[in-house]
Image (cartoon, rainbow, N blue to C red; front, side, top):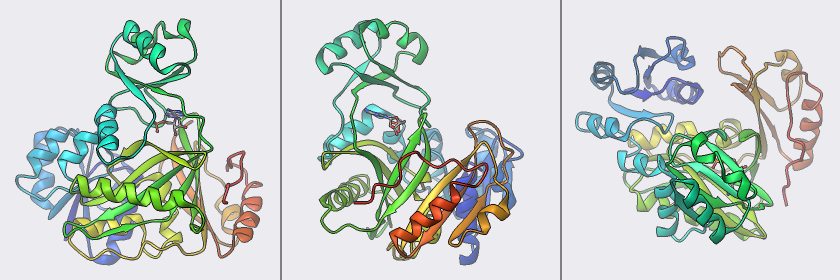
Length: 372
Ligand code: AMP
């Protein structure tokens, strides 16, 4: 079976690394001739909306998926007339627009920060009168890793926001969260669902720095609630594949923030830290195979390598540490790999983190994982 993937970044590469043992082969479409997934399959070099490139991809693929959400949903729609495309184009369209995403949260009964759609300084001022400061102003589409958003703290701060971000915005309440978490789940066309233990996520400058699995769920009702919400979203969208919901936790309450219609950076720990990784379960889902167990194995921590690659020997000499390099040239702010630490106890994970803290080129979040 050949799987076509729109996008040839590290998520595509990790999909292939999990699918090759299942007998799958891969073809990627990416505008860049050095896209890092090219090491794991054929690469068609073409823009994402290039009709000839997409036709070539459809001709060689039994099923098509994507590894980032900014694929034009019209492209997915057109492709799906000749070859199955999962996740469905309709889900893609919702997740490309933060306002539609907010409507989806409301439809499934998931709380989210209050928001207003805004298109001018005047509308932003109105929103600030209703919602108060600070406000987080975000572009409705194409924002990622903290790009396309600004925090506005007072009335003078409103000036220039629309000039900078454009006029297609939402303004939402700033949530003073206790922590950021995400829930990742897979669904098959037959409706079977596997939900992973939640991840605790640490961002800096809008970029995910580290994620920790949260396998201890007893006495923590938030975990069951998050799993219920993700299940409702999957069913509501008739979704096939893996999906991630990023959320804020505040005083034991959840606020939905963002949904990604794809495998997610906060789920990289599942490669070693779950019975079946998010990548394999995505492939199982889109190829009509049964899902594997999403149960956690011990305690996992994942640290992104951003802009620098450590000396491999320094990482590999730490018991329980696994190094994943994406074959990308380091540049400031660029995700070039990750390290997963796996331990059978929380204390063991702490010991591993202590050792990882001393490795040049690795930056750990300031706060330690806040497992309950
Ligand atoms: P996003 O692109 O929506 O995932 O936002 C990137 C990061 O900005 C999040 O992971 C949060 O750390 C922060 N952020 C986004 N929205 C809010 C909000 N309403 N309140 C507080 N922090 C936010």
